[in-house]
Length: 197
Image (tube, rainbow, N blue to C red; front, side):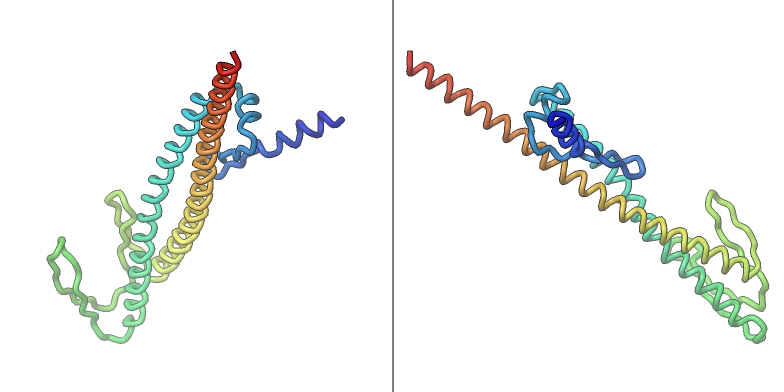
């Protein structure tokens, strides 16, 4: 019974969580038990942990790129919402809207926008569709909500990933330090046996 309890207590720290395909890192309390349970020597354990750390860094770079894209996309959607709201406010007043728009990088032109019931939105992949102002507003609001929700999930993923990187780095240090300690013990024991003989 006591052996079963001790094996379950050593198995519970091994359970690692996963978040959206990112494997959880295992915190190693006892390096000797960790190495014996996984059938690893110090060098292979360090190589595995270094490889896992590199995988985490690669995923972190991808997530940071996605975060930058979303952080750039959100203000664009908000600007589009403002433009559609301005068009709706001017609608029915008989007053034309004068706007500057970018033709190419650094080249602007002026446009006169009369009463208009529709707007065209870029959807991506060189696709533009015409929507009524109300449809465009609802679509843009939905896209804004989705982008903000995706950004929140991405930030949570990045935090989880940073925790896993920290745990892996600590584990690497613990395994390395344990190995140095074991070498010192072996060295002192061989030097003491050499002195005895």
